[in-house]
Image (cartoon, rainbow, N blue to C red; front, top):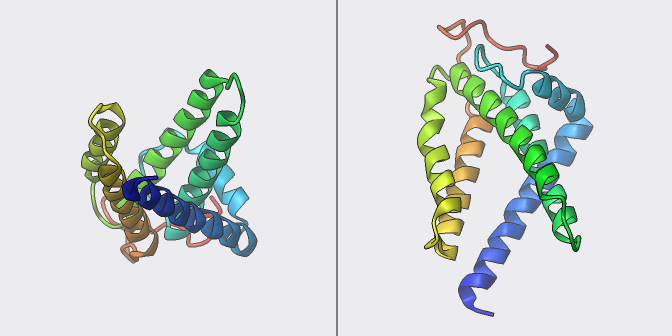
Length: 170
């Protein structure tokens, strides 16, 4: 096994553990599944603001569930590619929506996520994609997620709406 392959697998495992441990924490401490369900109901809602807790629950759970579904389906001899595509597409839409609303909470346009999305899309479509590029992209995406999870939003109403409920009950 090449060193770059080993490094890629190691980074993937570390990132997956981050998402799984975070998911367990938000489920136990903050009723994360209820917040996740509410996020699914806001699938195409790009208006308003999202709290740090709402963003963290949705981000952590969608990534964890996506990793689990990918692992389960890839272990099958004839995986249901269409079903996996629908599930991943649903998770992508939910994540884009909550990320836009989280950026609104910080006072930024939801379009700020566009460059990262374009880089991510290019990485999957490029034939010359390398392990080094994958590791770099993974760190960029996790760094962006951590920034959005821990950066405190604006305390007053802004042009995107009122301050979100900290408990994300709506």
